[in-house]
Amino acid sequence: VEPHVVTDVLIVGSGPAGASAALALSTYGVPNIVVTRYARLADTPRAHITNQRTMEVLRDLGVEDEVVAKATPQHLMGDTTFCTSLAGEELGRVRSWGNDPLVQAAHELASPTRMCDMPQHLMEPVLIDAAVARGTNLRFSTVYKSFVQDADGVTVTVEDRLRGDEYTIRAKYLIGADGGRSQVAEDAGLPMGGQMGVAGSINIVFDADLTKYTAHRPSTLYWVLAPGATVGGIGAGLVRCVRPWNEWLIVWGYDVTAGAPDLTTEYAESIVRKLIGDDEIPVTVKSSSAWTVNEMYAETYSHGRVFCAGDATHRHPPSNGLGSNTSIQDSYNLAWKLKLVLDGTASPRLLDTYTAERAPIGRQIVTRANKSIGETAPVFEALDGLSPQTPEQLWANIAARKDATEAAEKQRARLREAIAFKVYEFNAHGVDLNQRYASEAIVPDGTPDPGFDRDPELYHQPSTRPGARLPHAWLTSGTRTLSTLDTVGQGRFTLITGIGGDHWTRAAEAQDPAITTVVIGPGRQYEDPYGDWARLSEMADGGALLVRPDGYVAFRHATAAASAEDAERLLTAALRRILGHA
Ligand code: FDA
Image 1 (tube, rainbow, N blue to C red):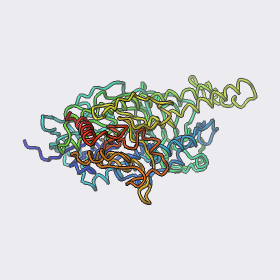
Image 2: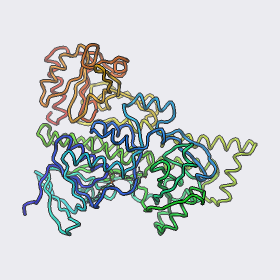
Image 3: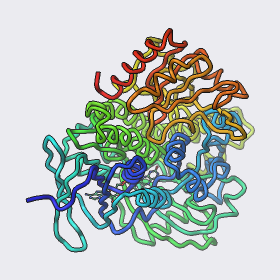
Image 4: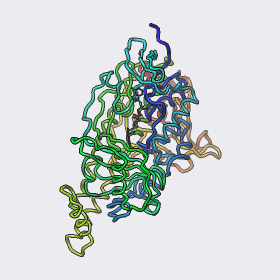
C-alpha cells in the first residue's frame, strides 16, 4: 500500500526535544511533520530552568526575546533557601543560577544571553508556534505505533485518536522525541545503560499567594527539611515557583517499592500544608501526578534512519535543571546535520556524529543530576536528621544549632558547608557551557587537549580549540554591538578571521556550500573595541576558525595561511571531512 503522507522528517513528540527539532528544521527549510499523542501541549510546568546555552540556541532560532518576555527573570531565581517550611525556620541559602556576584560575572563574560525560568507549559507553545509559522505540519491526537525502514526511508504507522484509524507516513528520517518512555527508542533497539524507577516522586501543582514567605528571598526553589523528606524523591521536599509568587509546584518523594500513594486532593493538600507551614494561606490544588527518578542513558542515539533525542535518550531527575536544556541542545545538534544530508551537501556519515557528540553529554548529565540528589543528604546529616527521623528529634536537632556550645558551633559549620556544597546543583556553570565534542565533524588541529584549569563542572572555560563552542565576545559593527555568536549560526558554516586572513576569506567564498566570512579588526566588517576577541581567540590575527551551524568550532588554523593554495587546500580538506566526504 502506498503511504498516505510523505515528508522529509517525521518527528514524534512535541516536548522540548520534538518542538525544537521542528523549529530548527523549519528554520532551515526542511519539510517536517510533528505527531503528538495528546490534543494539547504540556499542561503542567515540568522542566523550567533554562540555561545560557539553551538561550543561545533559542537566540539563533529567533525566539529568545519571546522566551525572555514570558519567563521569570534570572534575578528572581536565585535565593535558593533551605528551611523547615516556608513559614518555618530558615537554615541557610545559596545564591544560585548565576546570582552569586562572582558567578554572575562569569555568566556575563560567557554569553550574550541570560538564564531564565521558563516553565515547560509556556516554552512548548513558543517553540511549536514558531515551528508551525515556519512550515511545520503539526498533528495533535496522533500516536506513533511502529516503523519499518529500508534503504530510502522510514514508513511509520500512526493512529489518529479522533477518528480511531491508522495511517502511514513515509519520511526520509524519523526523530523519536517521545520522552522518557520512548516507544521509538525501544523499537529502534537503542542500547540503554543505567536503570529506571530509582526513586518515587509526586508533583503537586497549586495556586497560593506565598508573597509573604518568598518575595524577600526570591527564588525558583525552596528546599524543605521536614520529617519524611528523605524518603524517595529528590532528597528533600521542594517548593518550586511556577509564577512569582502565586503559582507553585511541590515535589515530594514516596517509597518506590511501596508504590505511589493515592493522589487524592486531601493527600495533596496535606503535603502542601506541611511544606508551607501556615494553615491560614488559601490553597487551590490544581493537579498532582506521580513520577519516578530515573538514571538511564542511551549508548547510541540512532539506528539507520531513526534518531532519538531528549528524554528518549537520557532520563534523570530534575536536579541541575538539565532535562529540557539537554533535549533542546540534542535537537539543535541533529537538525543542521539532517538538513545538509537531505539537500545532498553532506554524506549520511555526518549523521553518525550525532551519537558521537551527544551520547557522552547524555551520560554526563544523567550522572550529574543523580549525584546532586545524593549531595542533599549532608544537609540532613549536619542536623543528624537522616532516618530514623521523628519530628521531635529533627526539631530538637535544628534547635540545638543555636546553642552556645562547641558542638553547636561545629554543627553550624557543617550545615553551612553542606548547603554551600549545593553549588554543584545550583551554580554548575561548567556543566551548562563546557560541552566539548570529538567526532568526524571536528577536525583536530594537533594541539593537546588543554583540559580545564578549574573544576569543569563549576567553571566555564572558553576555548577555540576544535570541538569547543565558539567563545562569546562583544564586537561592534558601526553603531551595533553584537556577540561573536551572532555572527554564526542560522544554518550556515562561518569562517572567522582577522587582518591578514585574506587567503582564508577567498578560500571560504569559493567553497560549496558557500561559507559566510567574518573579518574582525580595525576598519573591517566587525571591530573588537574591547580587545575581548583578541584575548579569547587563541590565534594570530590572520588565523582562521571554521564554525559549524551549531556554533561549534570545527577547524582552527592559528596563523595566516602561507598561500592562497594552502588556504584552499586546508579548508577544502576540513570541509570534506566535516561533511563526511573524506
Ligand atoms: P517530553 O516528555 O517533554 O515530550 C515527549 C512528547 O512525546 C510529548 O509531547 C508526548 O505527548 C509525546 N509522545 C510520547 N509518546 C508518544 C507516541 N507514542 N506518539 C506520539 N507522541 C508521543 N524536568 C525538570 O527539569 N523539572 C521538573 O520539575 C520536571 N517535572 C516533570 C514532571 C513530569 C510529569 C514529567 C513527565 C517530566 C518532568 N520533567 C521535569 C522532565 C522534563 O519534562 C523532561 O526532561 C523534558 O520534557 C524532556 O523533553 P522531551 O521533549 O525529550 O520529552
